[in-house]
Length: 462
Ligand SMILES: [Zn+2]
Image (cartoon, rainbow, N blue to C red):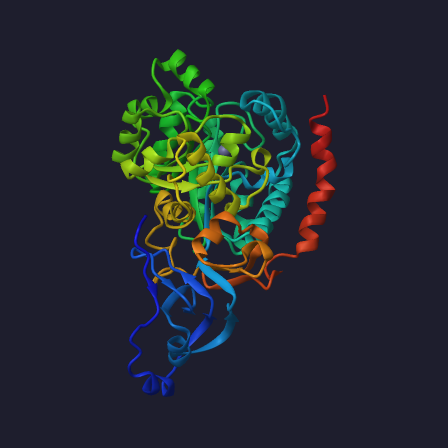
């Protein structure tokens, strides 16, 4: 257990003097319990946050913030918990269109008989746009403020993400076989390069290169993808050692396991993100640590597809930058990061026969500052601190299942659901207030997805 400091008394000398010269803030979130996720793990109860433009400028007690700032907009967060926006380190946003299309199958059967054929027939710029808007709506409503994506037509995903106001690390997929947005790996590499050039430097979008996996790309393509990412200094994202099948294929083709194979071809480096990392040896965990690789743990997807149990406690002990992900909605089947936190904790306890591993506080770290580290963005997001971007959420604590409230972190991880989120703020902009979405037309987004659904269903009829 780590020490948690509950700040109850801070110095507020000079309060009266400050009141006469109150500074202008664009937004103040006041009242409620503020879980900062800063290095000291401070919790202010009650607390308040002042935001100016895109950044957090101050965090203190409510009366101190009220004395220091005049705000254009004030959000009353009493009876709520305020925490950093959740960071989903692995998903495929448009795959919400395949939600519930094919369940209860092995990964390879699911991929090869359902998902790849459905994608071959239905992935288009329009489908990607409609799917991303639906995913963005779901993420905003369930408290996710940043997500890492791997898909096709990533420029459409980037535009829809930016319009919704979310932050995204978005990887254009590179894959060996013909897909909707490229006939060859060379074409997808060229597409990725155009995508990077178009979005580099955007305030919300970090463009990335996403070779699908080591078993769906040959060595030349994997090396070219890594070189492209390094040339532009952008993240490189890959699925890693998700199933035993992948390990078997790797052994047959390369006489070694996936993480070691990728090390042998010089793939790993800083700004690489590996999704899953279920089947890795102790030595490979050390390689990932030494190379500064971020790892995305996806407990729900791994359980649903019976892929295996990622060695979370070993990653944590080794100091690997570990984040949490939902994976695509076709294998989860939602994008609710509260559930991901809960399942990360439960799965580790169950697998290790040890109820003390991955306690609630660790699960929350994984979904916030841990995810930020895995994405190499810990200087900008992942905790509530002055100088960081204002990415935060407020969560109601009034439900019967949240009553009584002794420990805010326990409630966030063990009983809270995405639906409990009241306010979602990204880059200082309020995307949802009192569950009213400001950046998307909720009814239109859902209607468009429903209109597209019959075409998706027809595509997988055998
Ligand atoms: Zn995935």
